Amino acid sequence: MPEHLLVDYLFVLAFLAVGFVFAAIPIFLAFFITPRSMGLKKLVSYESGMIPIGGAWIKFGVAYYLFALIFLAFDVDVLYLFPVLLAYGSFPWRDLVEIVIFLAVISLAIVYAWCKGVFEW
Image (cartoon, rainbow, N blue to C red; front, side, top):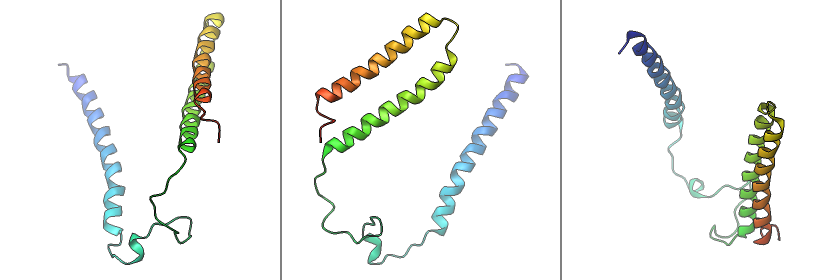
């Protein structure tokens, strides 16, 4: 193996080591400065500064979670679409067809969610 490749691997190893150290420092710091006392308030759930009423095991409507997951999926898709639109341009018709196919797949997901009743409260 040529010598310059070993130097490149050493740089990669050094960056990995520095990354692990920077990731481990906050974990160990939090472990050492965290208070360890157990009081009555330690086990009480905290919700917006209000004293909790009732138990934690209540039923929630799953439609809220489905709506949030669909929003998250389309948010990520739109974030993907911006750089794709900026990178395209050398073959305008082919690029337009690819973007239309991408948006059609997203639209099919919206239609599917609508047919399943996710958007009905």
